[in-house]
Length: 306
Image (cartoon, rainbow, N blue to C red):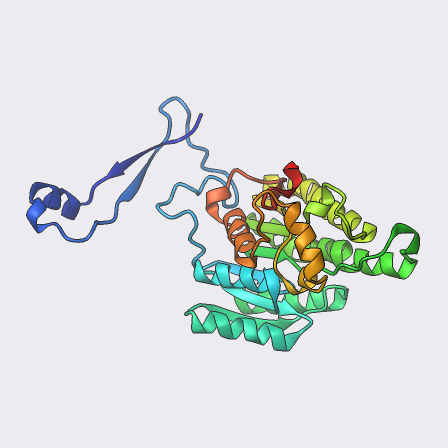
């Protein structure tokens, strides 16, 4: 059974309803939680589960969020969106110049952020950043594993080096970041993680071939389910997102001819923008999604329904 809510007008709102001629701007409403009379409230639940009954469950004020690969593209858009919603964002990337630009954009918009250089393939660097974040903030509330690469190659031309490089960045690094930062969330009994998968985890992407990339992203999707299962009892939610064709440097490098082919595969006929993926991720780490864990959320403009 679900909780019931009732909306209660403020005293100013009641006064305005009695004197409509003097009413000012629409007054805010406040929420008053009501549990079902025969279903006692669970007051021992850990994490953000069950806290989505606030007036603004999308608000991230006071949260500490870390985004990998945030120097450009989807990572930059995610960092911006989380900051807009109130989170303090730790912008990480191997490219510190790009990460600094992301921070500048956030600062200009009135948000707060800091830059940490991070090579996600290095265990030592992951630990260093983790220790620095905990020392500075005492906790980590949100983790977005966005860093990734794609190398196109036919299966018979996929060398061990090509295969292993993509697995190191796209899969191994995601697990290691989840393990390191997730440990703090697990101990604290609270946290939300979103891992970047791809629609390539669900279908074969045509006409380009990239078996290693597709398999790495499928691994991310299933790993997220397993971690969600293991950590749910500690209040840590883990989800993955599967973007479709997004207008970032990686796919744009394929050229105009390829873009035209892709558009014929998208029901909406439009390549997605990074902010569209960022909006979905922001939902997944907010209290508005407190009931969602262990899922691969497909945000592809409908590509996988054809």
